[in-house]
Every structure is written in C-alpha cells, then in structure tokens.
Image (cartoon, rainbow, N blue to C red):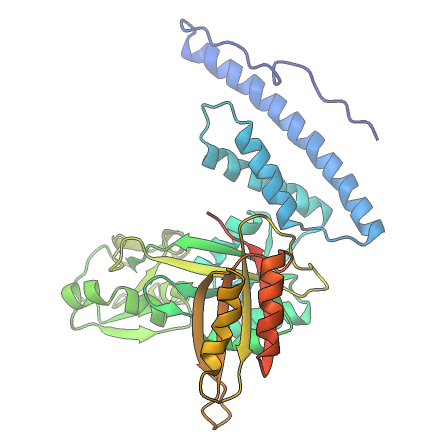
Length: 377
C-alpha cells in the first residue's frame, strides 16, 4: 500500500512576516489547520488499514510499547517552539483517536465520572477510550477478568498513605496482570454548592483522600463529620445533592457536578502522588517487552520458619537486583501466615533478573509474577 502525503507548506512551515497584521496571521493559522486536518485524516485512514491487518493476524490492537516509541520519537524530533510534554500529550490523543477507529478500547475505572482513576486512564489511553465506570476497585478487577472491559485501572499506592490494600488482595486472586502504570499528582479540592466554608456539616470522600487532607480539615472544619464513600467523585456527586455537604475531589469533578471550588489543593503534602496500575488478561496483552526502565511485581509466601524472609532477599543481593517495594498482607488462614508483595527494578527477560527470580521462586511456598511493565523516569 502506498500513501501519498502532501508536500505543501505543512512540511516546511511558512516564515512569519513580523509586520503581518492579526488578520493575516489568522488566515495563515486557518490554512495550517486545514492542512493538519487533512494529514490527521490521512493518518486515520492508514490506522483503519492497520486495524484490518491486526484483526486478520489476531495481534493486539493496543500496544503500549508502540505508543511509547512513537511518542518518544516525535518528542526527540520536535524542533519547537512547542514543549516536549505538550507534543507528547497531543500525539497521545492522536493515537487514541486512531486506535478508536481500529478497535475502541473498553477500560474499567473507578467511578463515577470525575475520579482520579478516570484521569489516570485518560492519561494512559487518551480521551478516545471507552470508559466503563465501576463502583469499586473489586468491580474493576472483575470487569477486566470477565472480559467486559479489555483493560482496567486501579490505585495501588499513595505517596502519603501507602498501599491500597484491597488492590493488593485482589491481585492475589485475579487472573489479570499489570502491563503499565500511571503516577498522578493528586490535588484534592474542597467542593460545594456554595462558595463558602460556612455551614458545612460533613465532608465526603474516599478514606485515603480524607486521610491525606486531615491536617487542613482539622484546622478549617474541625466540627464537620468526615464521611467515607466509595470514591472522591462519588463524594462530589453527593455534595451536589445537599448544601450542608462538601466533597474532596478534582477540578474535573467540580465541573462534572456543577460545584464551587471552595478551597484549592488542600492535601497536607503538596507533592501527593498516587500510582495506578493498568491491568488486563494475558490473552488480551502479554507481558510488555523490556523497555530499559521496568518494574517487575510479584507476590510470594514462604514457609513459617526462622530466617525465611531474610532468605528471600539473598538472591536479589547475589544478582544485584534492587527491590523498590516490600509489603506484607495477612493470608487470612488463621495461622499468622503472610503474603509478601515485592517490586523489583528490572525485567524478567534480563539475565540477572531471571536468575534472581529463579532462585527466589525455589524458596517460596507460593509465587506469582503479577506484572512486568515500563515505568517513567
């Protein structure tokens, strides 16, 4: 197949006459917009053909490693004045829109509209993804495992409050695995029907959001009830139904539910971040190839004997593999047994990581790799 692209001024941007009037410049912008639209549609037509080939060959429609490669290429070739981050955001949306023509990707997220989980999904998949809103992270896992959604996005860790324990528990029993992650800077805003702190009787939000804002709430709303709900967006939705209630949520949620932002960014830590994992069934997308900066996540248990946990660390030291996270969760057997969730720096295809994992597995009563995926620098 041959595709003929225009060799018009789109390839060589016209020089800007410093004496041109505003009207002249707008004419140039309109002309460039027309050329951009033609080129974008030409790309979309090629993407449709790509979708036909993928369907015929039975290969995955969504390839996050391919998305990353394309975005990195356009960033490195960017001559400016657009900033690299802005170019990356533009291209992610272009690729998302084109992918929707190949095969719309259904992505399960914590709902309702306006959650940080939704924001993380859009950052990873782009705005053209078909989002499926779930009432809990349990439902996100179930929707992804059942195939009603091809992918899911779940919170796994917050920089202040630590791991999301329910997500860890679900990884143990779910057939899904992790193929990517999003680290999101989380800003909690106090949302309400009226633009005032007066008369707030209850603040509704996810338990972690309430904990992340407890200092501000204790100072400014000491008498208000803290009421835990399934998500921050649900707290915002409920706040829109009662003038005495307020929610802690994103600016997107404020827009979604027509609420005032009474106070901006009230989280106690200005650099509050949450990690979200992108999950799918291995049949939908296999383990991504090594990118050069990867994380391998696994869950293990060891026999209850002296030194067993220490022995887990020996293969990592022997083969020079860094451990970036180590969490324990009760096995709920009534015998004081524990599962250990471990993040390692590297990919199982790397020889030193593979050797460490082989030795570690031999020590374990239970062993499961729950994902190996690229991480951002």
